[in-house]
Length: 424
Image 1 (cartoon, rainbow, N blue to C red):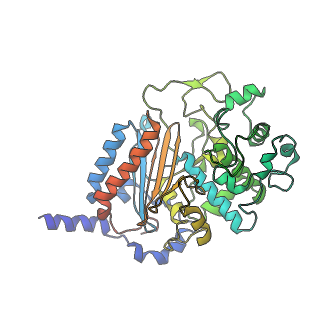
Image 2: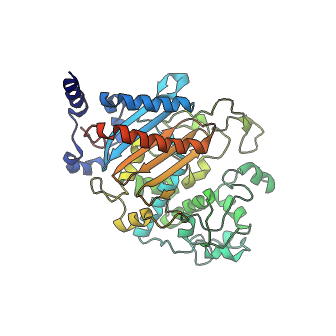
Image 3: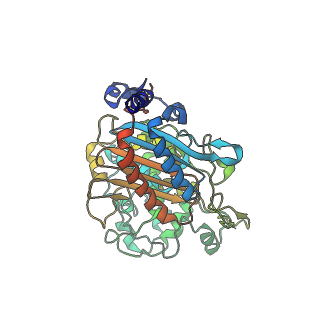
């Protein structure tokens, strides 16, 4: 009976589904208007052989008080599993589906880095190009005229990518200190990118560019401006046209700040239990839920503003991994530059960490969401995105990584041979 049951499970999981080796000829169509999210659902992704894994994940989410989460698992550029857990919006009875999009926070930096590498391949910039100064990319006199610390003229594009431009958060993270910047500069509205850049350029750098590193959201906002200047397009348009759509990702969106701004198929975000209301980011005097108006999420741009499904994020990773099953949108040289281990004390390009064992890691956290991407040396990529803040944020990312390891050990062999990236 056990053998018969195993055969039945295999048939259910495998019928009408092509294996990754059978789908390569169909991949060109997958990047030509095939909207992955439109073809995904929990029913399509379901597999009786992975019910125990689903229960493990549900227990994990319950432990952390997570309302909803989206999981995607791929192997060798084939999407094996895409599943939603819990609620996309509990108040409306809307369950999480793999087609829902969620804020991915600092995973956005990976997207931005791919855009910079694409511009380098198009010979529109070089990573060694200076960012400021008369010969720099952002050479407007409105910027150069406010600079008193000449070290700004030494900052390169690569310095921004690797968080070594000289910025720190000693006076608060500029991307999350909007209220104080408004008060300190007598602004009546939240600063746009141009205004914020001119304000920060008046400050002294905290260290010589290229000599140290300090994680900087502001540096990736500046990279968004670099992309706009070099490409002649606004950041979102360039990224969609030159990076995301060529990768087969059609439902990435820049997040709004409030619930009423959410996109079609975007989830609702939740704070952890007993979270207090806070002052609205724009000094309106209102008290707001932190994940809706506590900060200028849209203003983060390439530092943290993208929304995506876990499945489409998996598709993007498949497009920058040197596996030919899904055609890469970057050259092998560019991908190697982004993924080669060069030491524990140097940030990689876009990724948060490149490990000696071949793992590539990118995480992100904002009020109301947490995201983790882990690409393993054996070709598996696991992605989990949530729609809920946690009460102990940094520990959640670490325990999510442990969840991935446990699930890989127990269930990797049970995934069906299929590829949800392509039509079946």
